[in-house]
Image (cartoon, rainbow, N blue to C red; front, top):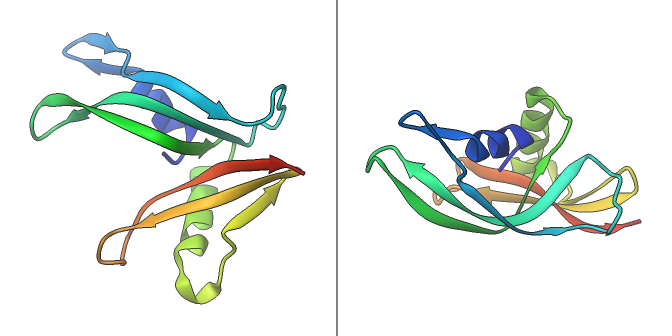
Length: 124
């Protein structure tokens, strides 16, 4: 999940004119009282709509995250730099005194970016 907007769309999915509360929150990672609004790291179950089968499928995201605040262009830039093998981009980042893993998953043929998201590691 790239951004809060994707989470918002999934949480507020409308199917056949009815609101579908499709996300069941399971847990979050962070420090109690965390006031860093840059990243959300959580786990959840959701009913993802399969457009080909025209039905919902249950899926579980054991760990995932999304950025809060960056523009779409900023997200694309971070994901692109992290994706390129020859730039030796770091796999961790410190943002506002918080350390994050920059998780990236490629397509099976290694040519495309499947998903890129931050995971909370610790407060610094």
